[in-house]
Image (cartoon, rainbow over all chains, first blue to last red; front, side, top):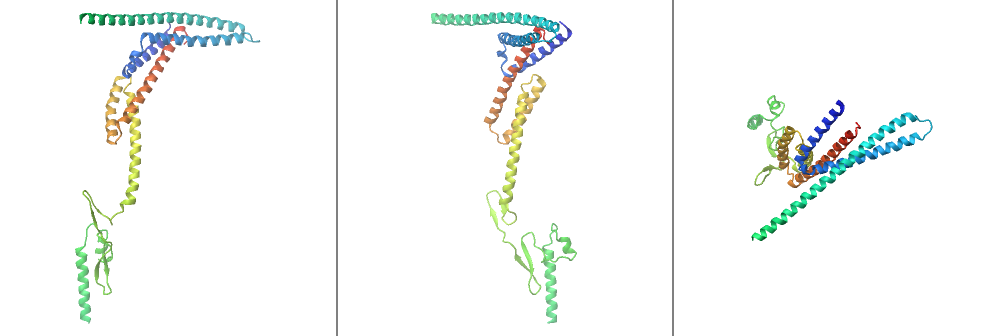
Length: 127
Length: 184
């Protein structure tokens, strides 16, 4: 990771922390669960991918035109493909992570419900 | 006859001196002129509304200019002839109302801004805003702004800020996604 990207990460993290503090004061801190962040990440990667696909179609259209610099366009396309592959793999990773979180959340909810049911049965039996 | 005229003149002069001395008012604007002899006692209208007029014989007589009457109420005493409250007070009341409305609107605007700052991530700034909001709240209460109105302002600001916070957080997540892909 380069110095520039490190600095960018630092700025983004600082912004995130400030927004979380503000959310705490606004009473919406609970909304920002890990599942929310992962879901937003999946959506964000979808947006990134749609932009990359649009750029790819533009480059391919340019390739088919007469008088264009084919070599330069091929280099650009190759670089773009690497970005697309990376974005797709990241989206898949975050999607599976999201599914896991949902399953975990569902299991937690299910278990809580079961515990509640058991507790009620126990109370009835004692009565 | 001559003697009578002389006596009359003396009486007239002494009456002038008497009334001039009697009604000499240090606050009167005419005092300096009267002392210099430019004005005589009957030449001006006094603050009481009385007039000093000279009759055919040259004697000063007191005449009521405008009849004053005291209008009594439970708390105030007003002279109907000294000023005209109907026209002048109406204008003043309208201006006062306008001033009050403008002040209320500005204070409400400040209240909104300060209330917004109470959610700021910076703790000293948020504390300062909390302190300021009490002052503005007191002034608004004095101006007669209803609690419902303030509650509405608080509600609107809170809803708007929550929405803004969610939008900003989405933006941050999106930026993170771009960074992860490697697009600066």
